[in-house]
Length: 146
Image (cartoon, rainbow, N blue to C red; front, side, top):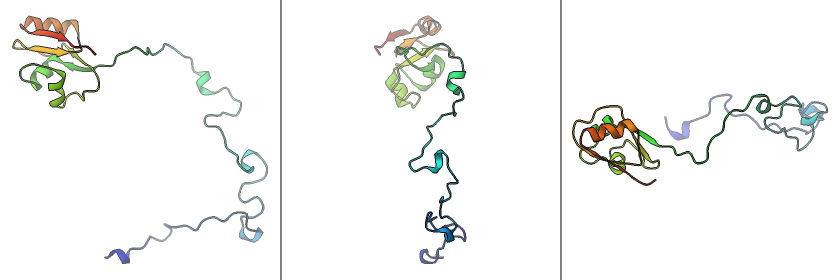
C-alpha cells in the first residue's frame, strides 16, 4: 500500500447541498427550511438556553450560599507523605521537585501520618494537629507568606 493508492471508503465524502437552485433540484422554493417560522427566515438564530417563555431552569432552581472572593485554595499534603518524599528540610520547593505539588498554589500541611525524627517544615499553613505532631517530634514549623 502506498500513499498514492489510498482512497476514501464509499460514502465517506458527500457533495455539498446546493439549496435554492430551482424546483427540480428537490431543494428549491423554501430551500429545505420548511414554511414560515423563526428558522425559515434569513439570519435566524435561537439564543442558547432560551426556553420559549417557560420559566428558565436557572430561575426555577433555588439559590443557596455564596463563594468568597477572598478564599485561599491550598495544595494539601499529609505530614507522613511529605516526610517520605523529602529528606532533610521540608519546603514547597523540595515538594515541587519531588513532583507532589505544582508550585502554583500555597501548601498546607495536614496531620495524617507519622513524623519519626525532628524536621524543619516550611509551608504556607499548618493544621493544628500537624503543628502539634511536628513540634512533638522535636521539629520546627515555619509559616511562609502567601
